[in-house]
Amino acid sequence: MTMHTIENDTGAHHLRIARAIRYLSDNYLEQPTLEDAAASAAMSSFHFQRVFTRYVGISPKAFVGALTLDHAKAELRNGVSVLDASLEAGLSGPSRLHDLSLKIEAMTPGQYGKGGAGVAIDYGFHASPFGAALVMATDKGLCGLAFGDEGEDETIFADMKSRWPKAQYCRNESRTSPMAKRIFEHGGELPLHLLGTPWQTKVWQALLAIPSGKFATYGGIAAKIGDANASRAVGAAVGRNPISWLIPCHRVLAANGALHGYHWGLSRKRAMLAVEAARAA
Image (cartoon, rainbow, N blue to C red; front, top):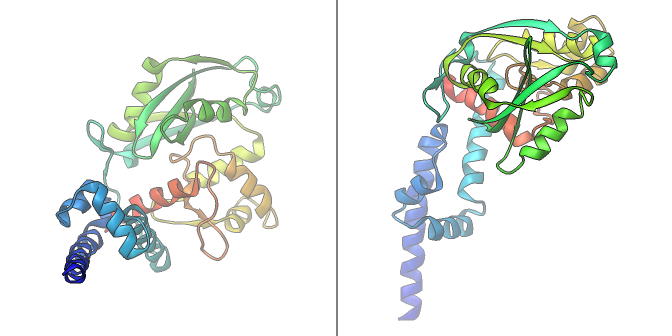
């Protein structure tokens, strides 16, 4: 009797997990939540998480991540151009990033050499599709856009502040909030103030030339800016990109086409690529 009950339970679990796998496979582009997946299996979220992991070998979240990454890789292999489309930001409206008009001005080498002395930077933290977003601005425009997870505000800020240690910082969400809305919701004109060395600025401007849905390699960027042997130096400059997402360093791949490291986490880079690829689909 006990064995029969166990077998019946096992069979029921297999059926429910099979339904969940079909649901996730059909809907992974929408990044379904644990609750959505559990509902498809008619189970509680807690029980579903345990049973799914037991039978599939990975968590529901990891399963969706694998599907998403495979989709992104397929897009890369096929060279499919990503259609300009809105990104549902989960805020008050759709993202219209492609409607941004970027005006670029660079810090003088002298200012950078002095660690940003004499530069005033306002900053604030805002919700975004990619986690907590640190938005930073001088009187000339957006100078920093960084990402992290919940509870990492101090770590993100310390990382960005170390780039211009002698600048004056003032937390001012009322100043940075309109910029965040422009980036993740409404679009519009947005000036960029690039605070870096002349070499870094040159690399970042090359990144800005990579269209949505296209990809570049470190070597390709090096050749484009006139030094085909400078792949390592390009990689260092890409890693110091202060305006992530807008300056699309997430579109830079290794020479073999593989995803490479990302300053704000490889999983976030995968998410950015997956979002662009998913919107094309």
